[in-house]
Image (cartoon, rainbow, N blue to C red):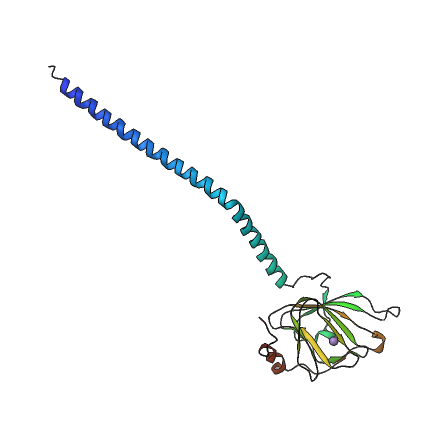
Amino acid sequence: MKPGYEFEKRFDRRRRIQACWKITFQFFTFCLSLYGLLLYIIKSYIMTDQSLIAVDRDKEDKNMDKSNDLSESVIFPKGEELPEFLSKYFTGKVWVSMLVGRDNEFNCPIGNVTFEPGCINNWHKHPGGQILLVTGGRGYYQEEGKPARELKPGDVVTIAPDVKHWHGAAHDSWFVHLSVETNANAGPAEWLEPVTDEEYLALKDNGNNNL
Ligand code: MN
């Protein structure tokens, strides 16, 4: 027996063991990649429908947020902030865009009025009456001696000539209505005292507030 024979035999065995480990390692790596690929395929297959729904929901949420924030126009232009000689009869910011002007032909000016949250007007009367067509947000209308009425888009309020009333936004919501001034030639609105804080704050607890 040659002296190097034992050494060569041992060396061969070591190489075989190394090769064996190498194959095992490669096999496991292969299995892992396959498992990952399989997971990816399954995930993308299942996710297709659900993720689309999720995207739609996300869009819906964003639209909902947008619809609650009426700081921009709703249907009709928001217009300009009310001039000081009128804004002093409101508790906050109001914007008006006249859609139909004051003229003798129609005798019925129509304005788009936007109230910031918590903004209402003083008690007042219209000698020719007024019609409110609510287009956005949540607000109130109250006639003297009657409980306040909660208003939402689509509501119509007919206000007879010389009936003392106020209208405006809920505490936590923008409010937008069209103001139709009927028989406008009868004269401008007669502005009276502000609604008291007690009267307005009471609306939070009287069941009108659904939020
Ligand atoms: Mn009015």
